[in-house]
Image (cartoon, rainbow, N blue to C red; front, side):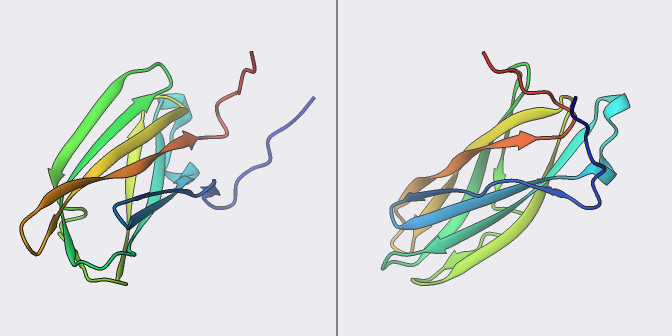
Length: 144
């Protein structure tokens, strides 16, 4: 018989990374026990994102597109300009970090998405945000 130990802070999980066109996106999600209410089917995560321009051209993050899928496969899409109210410019070698959050009605899920970038020359392109899992201690893994 196993038992869960109480969490004293956010549950830290793995880091996920993807590079598209020399722009690296790394994400580290955290389960927020203190903001979650499992009895009310409310589970909350924070995720820290770091973008790094490893290429030779200056780019700007213009739009975001998130696909959030809960444990039962229900999909929610979030689209909008920039991130956390900003449209950061990344010169070669620059990085930008931010933290945001995601509530779900299930104890686990998956997030993935893309950022639309633009070059100083006006070329638009998308970079992939790696898929990452939202795992809480309130979900039991079932191995088939």
